[in-house]
Amino acid sequence: MERIYVEGHRGACALYPENTLISYQKAMEMGVDAIEFDVWLSKDKVPVIMHDSNALRTCGVNVDLREMTLEEIKKLDPCCESKFGDRFKGKVEVPTLYELLELAKRINPEFKLGVEIKQYTEETVDITVKALKEYGFYENCWFYAFNGRIIRYLKERYGARTMGYPDFQMKEFENYDYYDEIGLSMSIVRSEICDVYLTKGLPIHMYCADTEEDVNLCIQKGASLITANDPRALLRIIKDTE
Image 1: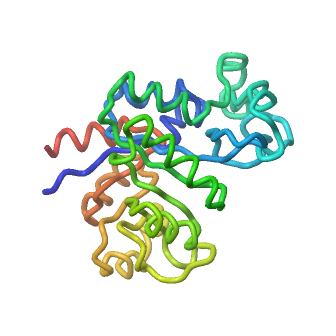
Image 2: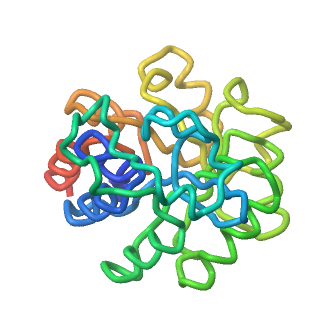
């Protein structure tokens, strides 16, 4: 069996506040091969890490990152209080892409990164790629986006290693010509339409497999990379199969 990469989704977001440095550090310490993160630009064009453009769900404040300066964003508290209570309150902040890359470089300069472009502008791609190249991570990246135009731009402008999603999940979808890999959620992996995407002959990333049953199904279906919110079961099973 070919090696299957283990990726921590937003770090280890089942255990720590998502898209925070502690979540990423703990995932790396667990032994994942890669981490997935989400990139937006602040009002002053700094790449910051958060899944949603709006900070309400994770920070409890109804504001849009794209309308905030980095200084303002740094005052947010992404402690995910609705999920973790006050356990992490006042102990985490919204990281910049540069801070995340510093952490990854310190722990393992060869670490792999799943870079989700959330803001669908060429400028977001350009600033993100520049940072990844400056920190020496560009060659170890997969670039993800739910937007066909951005996938195409990544491929045509940078020759990036791209991973898109099934056509019905994409915005501005054209075709699969610019995909190197394809991402399937567990709901699709479990469904009868999974085989439609397996027959495209592309390497498959499957997300988010948090139970032994899900992990084993991903392995059975031929996943090349498996993402988990809680990587512990995934790491244990993958280790046992090596």
